[in-house]
Image (tube, rainbow, N blue to C red; front, side, top):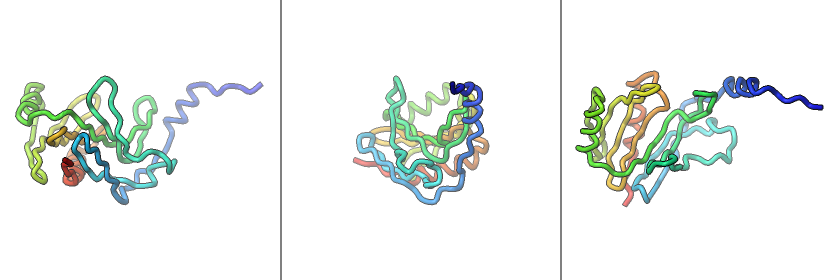
Length: 172
């Protein structure tokens, strides 16, 4: 009779997974006309083991109005899960002044206002289990949040996410 592999060994196998973290070789355009965005997201075909994996398809977060698009290489994370290293979160449209005020009320330090391609942007570091350098872009139909899974280098992550934000085009 065959024996079952203990659960611990299966978890350890998942935790020992090595992923390709080579730099992006190109971009893939993600467009959502309902949410009014076209954006070029970094891509490397070596980040995917299975070439038929869906590329940058958005999904709705449970019990929210937020659509998430995961991108970038995969990595081993909490409980040996395999998430992608960056996220585009598409939020319902909210007023710039009101959103900034809500951040200030949460005592978010160092909120920076910018403008990229005529779009208003707030940059700040959100604190939770990790630190999340956040680039929050205000659109017409929705707002767009670029954030890493967890940051080890805030300056580098802000630069990377700003470079992606520069590709945003509002779609009527």
